[in-house]
Image (cartoon, rainbow, N blue to C red; front, side):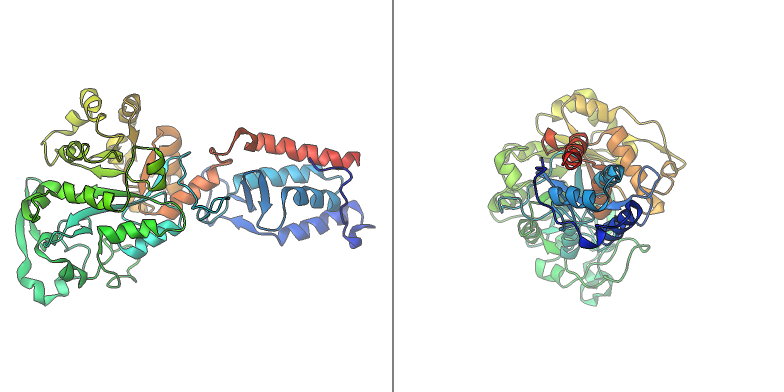
Length: 470
């Protein structure tokens, strides 16, 4: 509460102004304050505009200019008699969120903790909608844009070094074709019960892999970064997260473990999964979901191979996510059908080893002629088994947006978060998901009840009343 006796300095040139001129003067000042305007339409169909508010731990600021007390007092003095203006600005401000990543430091100077009050923003192979996938710059961009977790796929080099790379072959996303010295390395191997021909990561040492440069997977995405960035190792990936200015989780996948274990042998007799877990433990990743240790260095372990997830459950308590492919694809290690692994019987079994599932989104909501149809009950049933659901993959381009969403990625996010009720989203465009969640989060859920929009309005009303009485 602001004391009625608090001395306020009225701008001298407003003392003799008429109410209309006072209002105009006040609005002129407000226009000079920081503001935020989206480049497109918001999820409600209306453009989101307003003053840039920051409301956290009892502080309401416009940019870094005014404290709550100064804000109300100054507006009241220059716009006496126009209390509705204050309420209008407040309402606009509560719906317009800052267009910047989460702050790097908490109030006590420690790293800003991982948010746990809304679905996780999972940077699929980094911010790979903008920068070639699984590269250091793609992950740095994702962190800057507000990712909660950076996601990667772990494979192995010929000499047993774990690397971040999605495909078992190098053909689609590197310049391997231009390296004539490697022309004789092309092979045909069986991968997930199908013959695949190409240049395989398991036939190259780390040094050789580092001589390659990564390129954008899709031709319709920005090509300017092609040929500029190297493949990175699992440990280099981890260092990116640990060096982030705030707590950023990692979300590594045990990729094609059957294939890797067939082609790469470690001198100590250990398996791919052993090396994977040892790398995490070496860098301090431990603890069950939401434990103190986990919150310090959050990590989810994911895999399409249920046997691998069961195997590592005796080696680490880190939370695990069972990935689920298309309805036509059988599990790579246990040869089970989609219908088997999504049955209640199987969910009841696998929940002993995992905290959630990661299904392809078009199996959760089937698609016909590019229209999303009636959702299945998979999310409801998974939640009934106390399993989280993190579908993949959300992409901004019209090619990937179903007609129901009118070519609007925000409409798609709104549908999946608020109607389907998922717990995390794999996205190629981290910034878009972050901005959507910021704009549509009127008040932080991890703040206490005193920080709701309704109570904030009442506080402002009481502050204004105190000036009226004075």
